[in-house]
Amino acid sequence: MADSGCWRPPRDCDDYWSEWKHCKSLRNRFHNYYTYGKAPECQEWKRDYMTCRDWEKTKSNNLKEALQQSEKTRLEGKQNNSPVWTLRKNPPPDWYLPLDPGKPRQ
Image 1 (tube, rainbow, N blue to C red):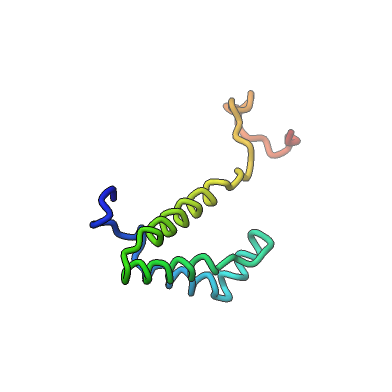
Image 2: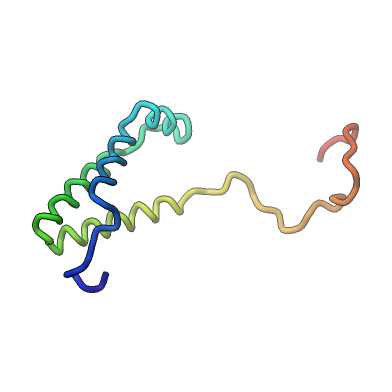
């Protein structure tokens, strides 16, 4: 990818279109609203699709950098999710004992 002559977008341009169509679907909107409490932002997929198509026509360095930055931002956003529960450092002190259904949980 260092040579601009053989650089390709991180995804096929049609993949951006498919992602945009999926993002706009009713099922995905409902899922995002249920999971995150808000509707998904879909315009970035359409913008990336248009940028990719324009890059295929012109091979512009600015468009190339825009696609790379968009993918980088998308990957960074995926890594910002907080864990659902805290990981414990050690097992519980009585982990080896048989389970007792009558024992109150701590």
